[in-house]
Figure 1 (cartoon, rainbow, N blue to C red):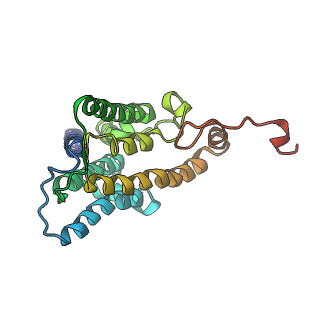
Figure 2: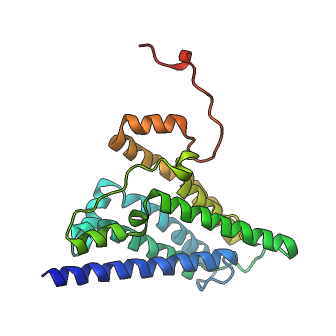
Figure 3: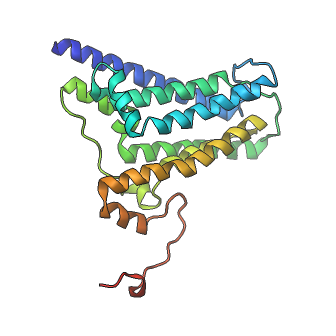
Length: 251
């Protein structure tokens, strides 16, 4: 029985991390080329609806799976409830792969960087991915990568979730993962209507989606998160007005 549990955990982990590499790899490749090389072949104008469905399915499912009902669903779809976080990362990876593999390109290039500007945009693209990777690492790599669930099952333990992140990038802004993700959508050397549509819609999601996360953190961490939210900006590292005694509630 222990051997079976271990094999199932390792198989779920291998599927999760393999699909994660596939989804992120496709995202990097196709974003870098402005979605001009995606493999979708829906006829126009139906391609616009197909692309919109691809864009919408990622944030919708990503958010719904974080609700109470969504988390219960995640706990049921795997061979062990402890695999819920692994299943979440696996599903998100499949969603990313679908978007970037099956997008139907318009074939229109609005701007193509050249010369020194090309290398500048390449550097910014790499920096955006570096920022996103660092934010993921500092928030808890096991949780974000899906490792938390399958590792807990393999060890026959309950998953131990990381504490609320407050160090590193999280000392500067509260949502560096969403900021880094958004920056990857804008820093490529090829601009197309496809890339702009995706960037605008998903950047809007990156601005609004953390509000749900912060409500959840407020319930979990209470006054600690309230104090953190008061001293650290939400999405951009904008200066905060220093609080004075007059701003403090009456004792």
